[in-house]
Picture 1 (cartoon, one colour):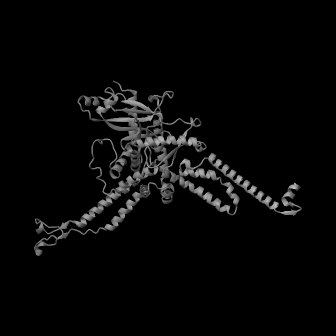
Picture 2 (cartoon, helix red, strand yellow):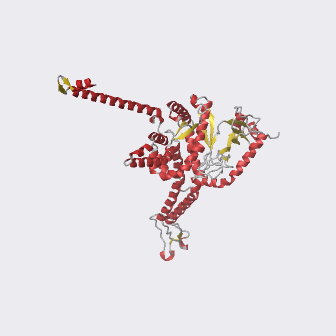
Picture 3 (cartoon, one colour):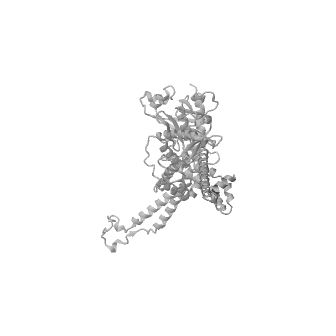
Length: 548
């Protein structure tokens, strides 16, 4: 049977993606050995095999511990499950001020938060941050789930290959996974699998593992008027390299993978992360620790030189041990050489290298976040402003390449199950936006608030000499801007209509108070006039009335 065009195209794409990653693999394997031994799955690795020597290269685990703090700190600062970290809003700022629209946005947020809480997103996002810290790139697959709405899976370095589109964003991914012969036949049928899988089933080797490749890429030449899975924007294909045809094909409306990169150059598909920056220091740290240990061993148990007369004698080298011999025949017995190793200097050097590693992995910032998860964005900015500026571009990448893809996919899954409330008529067809309100995202925004604070301070200082300068400030717009930056709940910042109503009531109360005060003053005047006797039975009030 001749191979179909679909399988030939899939294998050709796999070979292309594989060739693009080949130059990265040597460094990735070094990063696994020295920084993250628990991760990584490369060609030739057996997925069911426990590698007992994974940590053989690590004597000092400082970098590995810092990497765990890095991942925990990023999750706590960007998408903590304990606090809101995003909100939905309209692209039109004016519409975001209406209470009815705010309630609609809040209803969408509640459904997305609920779906993510039910899913395994938070533990998988922690792994995604860990992969970025170690290898510069992470890959998260997303699938609809009948019970949990959505399901996530973080891949590890070596088991996937990616490529970018014309916009520089990763839009193509091929993953290698392993499935049992039984599961493959159950999912795709006996006629679809290769001869090797069918033979395993015939011989009752049901649980033999076989490699299966999953390719996700933009679909070309689709019929946009049709809504079936074979005409959706993103194509999903499972295949075996030796297959005559693909195992199965489906599609997704939203891209089912998120591939965030810590940093990258131009349109390169793979990123670089803190792990790349500290790899040499991590290797150096292991060598320094090994040298220190050897020196300590030599100091405690040095090689000895002894006379030939003691060659066949048992020497007691224990503390307090006694050895008897004729000194005139024994000759000299003692260490072969003296080890003059400065242990304190070695420890200082080791600590210097550890400090470099911790700085590159932002350990002090993330320890602070882990110790105080309820810390406000203002507190974070005040304590670690220089670190936040360094993290700025990376945080933007997390929101653009990672969190936005997760929210979009979850929203689409909820929409398919009709769990998104119908939009108000004024918002139909409206493009919704995501605003990130996590502690780290807010701290980044607060850095921009400094200029607003400076503007207000200068205005207030000048107003002491020139009161008219306050006319230049639009206080309402300033407060709206501050509310957006700090991410306070919408209910705490009144709409323009509510503010206008409060001001009108206040002015009405002032006017009424002035009227009552004027009436009281008029009564007092009339009382005084009525008590002023002008003679002839007249007082000042009657005289005034007569004159009028």
